[in-house]
Image 1 (cartoon, rainbow, N blue to C red):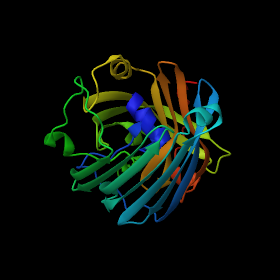
Image 2 (cartoon, helix red, strand yellow; image 1 turned 90 degrees about the horizontal axis):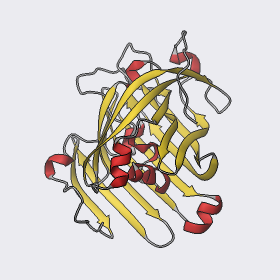
Image 3 (cartoon, one colour; image 1 turned 120 degrees about the horizontal axis):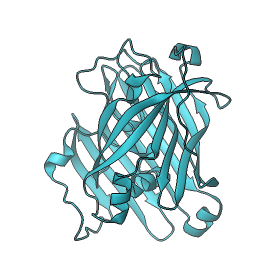
Image 4 (cartoon, rainbow, N blue to C red; image 1 turned 90 degrees about the vertical axis):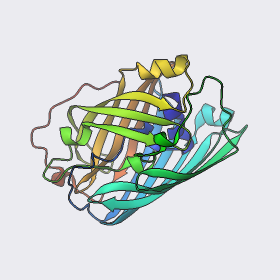
Length: 288
């Protein structure tokens, strides 16, 4: 998932796209109004390489998300990598529905901006400047690939069906369809357990999800794509950010050069830990 990791540290979408709307048939309670803000540290094989901050304004009808990210330390000195993103949309029965998405990123040598309009789950207009050079081995993106999708930043907010604990299998068990303006991919999540976290603005349980990356279109058929498609060492921790919404607290991905971890250093939420309501917390396997 090099494309997905790169997106997270350049502003094209934090959290590796491990989030999306619940199945259309699921009914969810109205989310709590409020502001969610989280700061993340990014590390590679235990060494800090970047930071990211996400801010969300949420009310029962709509949401707005903003992201700022940059590489730090030696990685930042060498590449100057930084990025930003924004997304807006509606909440239909508590389910995020994208309306607009933009992202920009720079690595010191080049920069790129993506703007995408979305209507009823379909990407209706896309502008990428400068355009991405299409390689001969890239899988073509068709109009069909632009339907039934959510943008990678809106996908940070995940709904949980009414009556279900936000830190249970209901937070994880789903298949996701993400389009970032250039590539279409699925993420398959499965429940692996729960765990207690504390001391970073949120004290309470998180749902542990194992994840699989499924390339659909826009990717190149090469070694890196094959490696990530076969990767069984991807995991996300999800924490409540509303009465029926969860968002990433921690993500770990084994890359070809070592483990990448994106973890909250501050996670402020409009919901209290007690509202998460998970009395029987069981530990899940943690990959460092």
